[in-house]
Image (cartoon, rainbow, N blue to C red; front, side, top):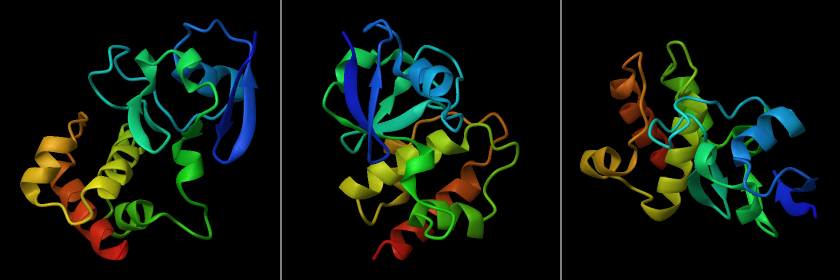
Length: 152
């Protein structure tokens, strides 16, 4: 039985095993490669995307749980011509080094800013717990503050 959901604002469907991680459906079946595989244990956050606006670690989130829901990946956060404030801030602050983990950080940040539109450094430290092996945390913090300002 297919699992039906909306992906980046458009109808989507999969016949994948209902217990398959959403990450692999998004990457391998649908072909959107922005959401990354990091650890496979929901610890690093590279696979973060949104389900009904909430940040979810898709490597450990079964596809059956998206039935009838809205899924947003980094590809659906903004467009080339109309970047999301988080994407714009990341660009302005030149955040990425290798860039691998950055889509997950941007998705986690976008979800946090919906809940905490003007975060403090403590809010950021408490809510953005993804892992960056390159150590771009300082630039990310600056970008998160800039994104909050751009979102106003």
